[in-house]
Figure 1 (cartoon, rainbow, N blue to C red):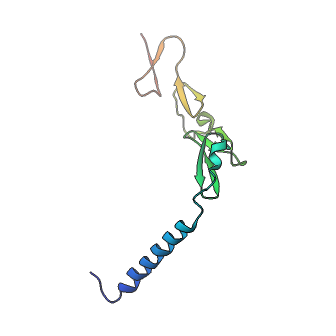
Figure 2 (figure 1 turned 90 degrees about the vertical axis):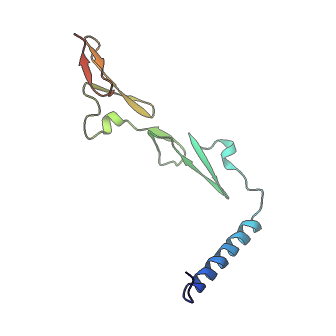
Figure 3 (figure 1 turned 135 degrees about the horizontal axis):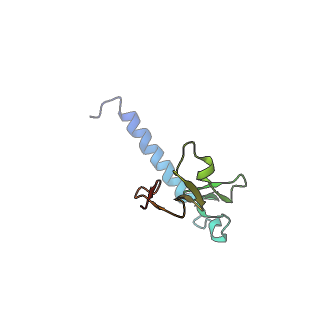
Length: 115
C-alpha cells in the first residue's frame, strides 16, 4: 500500500538506482583483470580496479594477502575428531585406526575390532 509517507522513499530508491546505473555506465569498460596474472595462491576475485585473494575450504589466507595455508584440524580441534588417530591432509583431515585388528567404522571417526 502506497501512502503519502512512502512516496519519498520510493522516489529515493529510484534516484539511487539511477545514480548507480549512471556510475556503472561511466566506468571504463576496460577494467584490467588482475586475476589473469595469477597473483593468488588459490582463488582470485576480480574487483573493479583491484582484486581479492581467497582460499578454499580447509585453508586460510596468510597475512601477505596472497598465500593460502592449510588448517591443521587435528592440532586445532577442541575435542577429539578421531577416536584413535587424526591425520592432517591438505584442506581436511582423515581418521586412522591401528594397523592390526581394527577397521574404520561407517562414521569415519571411530574404529571397530575385527574379531
